[in-house]
Image (cartoon, rainbow over all chains, first blue to last red):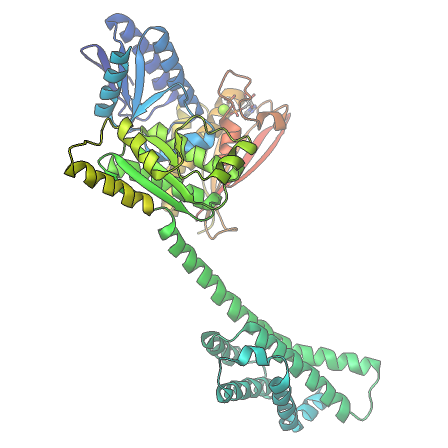
Length: 119
Length: 289
Length: 133
Ligand SMILES: Nc1ncnc2c1ncn2[C@@H]1O[C@H](COP(=O)(O)OP(=O)(O)O)[C@@H](O)[C@H]1O
Ligand SMILES: [Mg+2]
């Protein structure tokens, strides 16, 4: 399974619509980095509204992808993390400190724009 | 029960009842009775003692004990009155047996105690059970009521909501607060939530930990938490305990927090006369609550 | 009905997803709310992944239990792998032998209400319970 990555101007938009198993998550990491490289995108919004479970492995993959994208010059914002998912992450002790968040895709884009303009 | 004892007790039941009623009359049980009429007390006591004797005569009757217990719980009489009453009843019965038995030795005394206990204890247990199950149901009802009151979320402006916390925060409540908080953020599409702890009496490491976790969880779903209502003594405990709250904004008052929220949501209080006054009034009235 | 509900073998990576989906469905059927469903499913995911990663294979079994409250979901994760050398160490946040976050086991403990672990040369057995409130 592959997660589609869309390009919009300088940004990449990703909406995760399927349950993230380990293989899919790793594949996504690879695809996203490849796409950033290919397009020179400076911002990425990853919408997680439909994701019902993030365990420590998926959290690590997602956190890593933010750091890796950062090294390649792209800012990542996660949007739509569900309350239940957020609470389980907190219970796991995972705070995703290096990750920017927003309520939904639209807010995520606004946040990215603001941050990239501030620079 | 030894048939001989039973005979004696039943023969002298009138005497026992009279003594018992007298005992209740002038014992310290008086304290309990200030709000209940003497007639009522007399009537219920008589019902009670009749019940006890009917059990001695006809054997244990779960149903009649339950009925009596239910009645007494509904009357709201203190449990202590009943247990002390049972105690004095026990003593009077033992005395009466000792008086009327021709001879008795140590073993006989033990036998008397045992037989009396065997008769009286199940009744007492039943009463205590009735009380405690009543209490348990009251407690669980109150718990539900408390949960409903527990963590309201109040939207004040587009994107800005306030959660005033009142009372002690334990682990169960912290979970509930967190759930309400996150659901509320989604429902009201809040960019900023002000958590007001003015009404939280003690902020120890545990409470601080819960609040920090709630704030972290809010951040993960994409909103910002501002902790407001930090009284001086709370600021002192937080620092003395070495709790690190530096990672998210804190403000002394709801008013200051609200100003910060406006800043975050890219708003300003406009200063053209009327309108400014209205917003100031809103802020002030919020602050008073 | 009380007792054994089902057992899910963990052999390949995708079984992790299968196990947590079964767990979530059982939790929902027992009446757990959506947040506790997520907690339970996440805990299963952690346990199943550990089996897959560190023991190669094993199983996750589910039981309905009674105790602290009338309904609880008990999950037993067992394997015949190498066992955990230092149990108290792995219960510390951040300890991992695989470059993981090391949040798994201490996290599972926080996600669930009861947590027990038995581990020796013959393998590892982790028993957790979540009570319906
Ligand atoms: N079933 C198991 N069998 C053997 N070792 C295990 C098992 N589960 C966990 N471990 C050990 O415990 C460590 C901590 O596990 P965990 O808390 O899940 O963190 P992580 O998986 O991120 O390393 C693992 O790195 C591993 O060494
Ligand atoms: Mg693990």
